[in-house]
Image: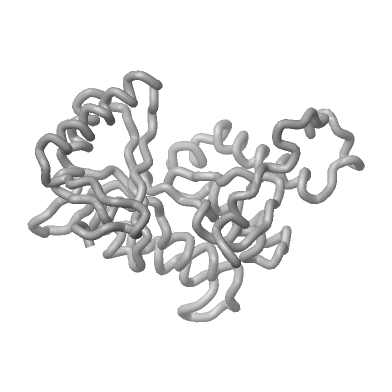
Length: 250
């Protein structure tokens, strides 16, 4: 898996080559320093040479101790996902990646909680069962939780444009353990699926490049359902700032 190309149009770096390794590490350090980056998302992390990634991560930690680094690991099962970040396993290879994109909490937690009927192993119980495996992570609070992204169906479409379910999902996203990640358009109920291709979940934000009246200045009667969700999501974020348990977990 780590030695093959991700797709034919995206050739791999030869991360076993020392000169390539040095270039990638220097480029990562320069990019953080030059642009003041405080968080680094590494795409398709599982396809990289993992020992090299430990070296690259450590070089960044050494120079930027407060930097957050997480990797995209689209795998299935908490044991599989936790293997690629700091964990509590006694195994020969130990990753020093702080966290991953938490597909497990989405696919085996929030999604079934809002799309399946209640049952012993279905519905909201899947969210409980998935989160109960947090003991496998060294620090589950670093996991990056999300409802959707550029590769999967927008969550508003996943719940069949049910605004009540969408609000519940936002409540879990913004008060659950981990670091919440929002995809542009979440706040105004953008819909879309990956059929016939991923472009349909990557459409331009409505009104992009145009002068529009700020939602905060509109009267409630002027706010359609989509813009009301923006107000609600903003309220959740402000609540997280104001209340210590929501901000720090204790």
